[in-house]
Length: 222
Image (cartoon, rainbow, N blue to C red; front, side, top):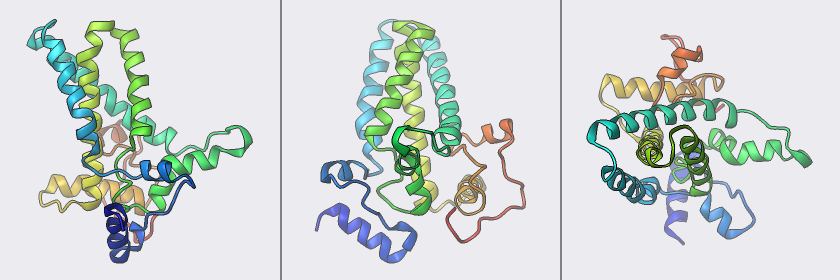
């Protein structure tokens, strides 16, 4: 039995919401749909370092910090609106593929929210998102300044994935940590039409999709 299968079997035996269903008949595609939580930093960490190293040959520290902030804010908006509209909207795709598409990119996570190998984005999803972001950033800021902005964008994405994994499997001790985890558990176990910011939870307050202070998670996935 593979290490991935061992992880899935152990998690599912301890928590039925951690079952890991097969999504594709093709073995390779199904394997690529399961991701270890360290994958984003391993895959994108060197890219971020390369972007920053190159940017330092062109810009000073102040400009790079400003670019990183721009990239970070850009990701937080992607996180919020992507989760709210892309992940939670069934698109009218040809041949009735809309429900299947929504299920594959996010619906399965709501049915099995504690599947340990589907808590961070697979590269097949995060890669295209980052390429689209690069295209838009280059159009807005030009070729050279797009590199430090993209470094901030990717860094924020990796942070988002880690926070998401931690909200499901971390053991927060601080009041802030408990607050962030509670918001995401409310999204899963109380009301999936709110709480779209994972680490960028402030956008829910800006756009009116925040939870009331006294709301508590339920016991069933939604």
